[in-house]
Image (cartoon, rainbow, N blue to C red; front, side, top):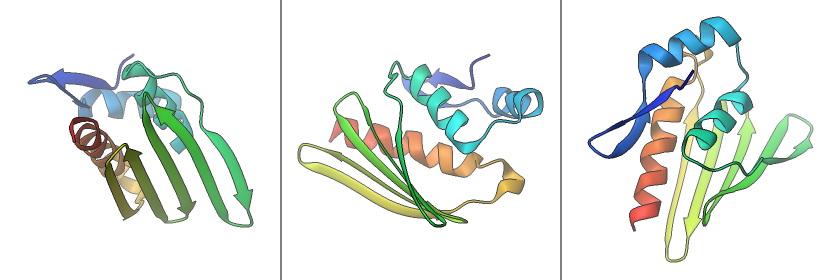
Length: 115
């Protein structure tokens, strides 16, 4: 089951499929991230470092370096590619199944890719 789709040439979250995926699989944040990256054609597995409550993931989506630091409920994400960089912090709300974070993730990934 795919949770993303292409709309106007851009990969976006398919909300209905996303919710169905959550109901069937009850995935972790990392499961969703790896699924979205795979649907983008990237299979680089995030490498994890944990220090107390803080968890850091580093990985690449093609030539974009991504670093994610989770200190629940806050997630700081940095994406860099050659001369472009996006850095944002977002609070996760598990009641909305992290959908806003992953929508911003795809949007920012596109922005870094095209900069």
